[in-house]
Amino acid sequence: MVAALKKAGYVSHGVSADEPLSRSGHAADRITQLLTDQRMIGDQEQYAVTAALMARQLGFPARVVFGFAPKDVTAGGVTRILGKDISAWIEVDTAQYGWVTIDPTPPVREIPAEQPKDPTTIARPQSPVQPPIEDQKSDNSPVPPDSTQDEPASLSPLLVILLTVLRVLGWVLAGVAIVLAPFAAIVAAKVRRRVLRKRAPTPLQRISGGWQEFENSVIDRGYLPPPSPTRTEVAATVGGLKPLVLASVADRAVFSPNEPRAEEADQVWRSVEAMLITIDRGRTRRERIRAAISLRSLGGYSVKNLFKR
Image 1 (tube, rainbow, N blue to C red):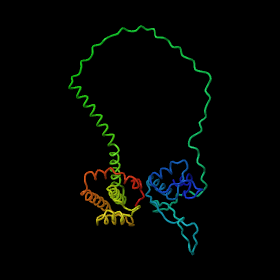
Image 2: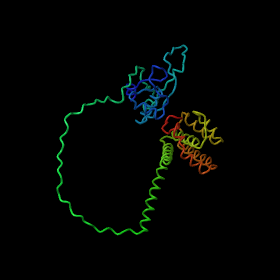
Image 3: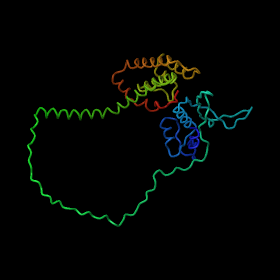
Image 4: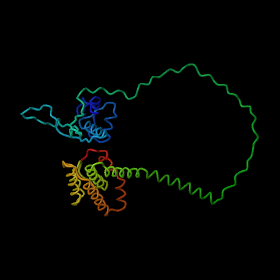
């Protein structure tokens, strides 16, 4: 897995003029672009996220680690650590050795030029020999005499009106279904996201998913936390003591060295549902519908962002 990444990938931050363009971030669309582009170009963050996803797909618990990896380390002396020394790698949990550190980032090397996407089309000259014209045989068969059949009995006026009404009603329902289909898709995506978070395999993932569900829900309801907020900042934007307590519980579970219990995860989800009911209690039906079909939480707060803690 790691050997394949190192063999096929190239490192580029896309910040200098002599480097190919490379988008930042590790959202789902960026990782998809890394794996599907003609040249696999990314930085340490994107290769670490990709390797962690591959390890999890194979059944190994994995996590992404961000830190500093200075190149010039002086033994017993002073080592200067700069912003360019920031790097990322992964840790994989093994049965024999515990958490093992793995660096999936390819070595720095020259990036080849991108090949043209569309192959060159070669025009072939048209053959001067035309295909033979098939002889058209005239059909001399005699024309059958006209035959008349008894016309079916005419429908009753009431049945005609009923069929017309049903036809119009069917078109109206089809139009309504087409109009409502995007909104139904949004609601279905949020329901699926909620179910996946609530049924995550570990209590830690369920607690983290419960907080993400609360954060996405309040954003859909019009709350505006600062960019890249902490849990405490989101709770302060909502206001009240209960969101702050929920943020504290989620932080303690995520950063604790011990795995939380399943009862704690269930309590977090009960608290999230109770707080959302309290928030909606003072809202009109129109405001609740707008929150249900809002796209704000499906953007930067995507459920595929597996490494947001």
